[in-house]
Image 1 (cartoon, rainbow, N blue to C red):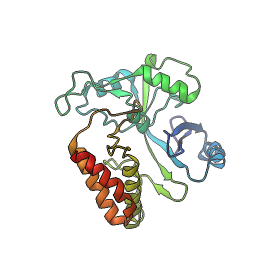
Image 2: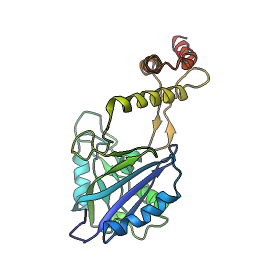
Image 3: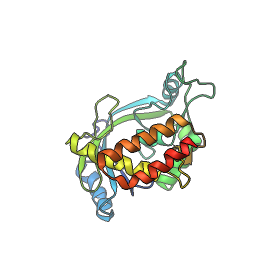
Image 4: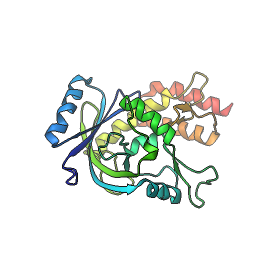
Length: 260
């Protein structure tokens, strides 16, 4: 899809080794063919089993930066931003929705209570600047001084190295999530992956790694019994479905930790 206002095509490619955050690159050219050429080079160098997400930018809206700040301030729910944002017209400082939410670049006000009133969210320009410098290698201007921002949405595909899925681009909660081609078969593989993940989260003493602050790359320090036992239950249900009874030993260990 060409942006007729600028007569150009912008693609975003995200590549992850499955263990670390994806490296994101925005590529802008006069045609899709020209924009695709550097992506071909990236894919040629990539290992077979990596995760790749390729998106094309569309529905671009230019707004005053102050207007975006007002929109965020008036939001009633935090961390529910569903668009990409660029601080320049050439998309050198563009951020995907997942980058914004994953790094918590838009933060709620200190006085915000979940479910009550406005979130009074604000843009953490300092963290955005630090991230863009690390991602791009440099940043040629102060994003906080830009008069305009460019909001956008995307359509695209995701691949795990074996299969390609189209991403949902409807304005629903599933926006940006892969569309299942064969739900029964695919859900079975996700149950296996979920079981693997839960067993991997069990520490030697039987306690789960409770969770993570994705924006800060830190492990949560709080804990509660409801989440512990619900995780045990989910693990036992998965074991019963997959027949992988070797994981029962670890399930018993974490169950005993909760009882003790």
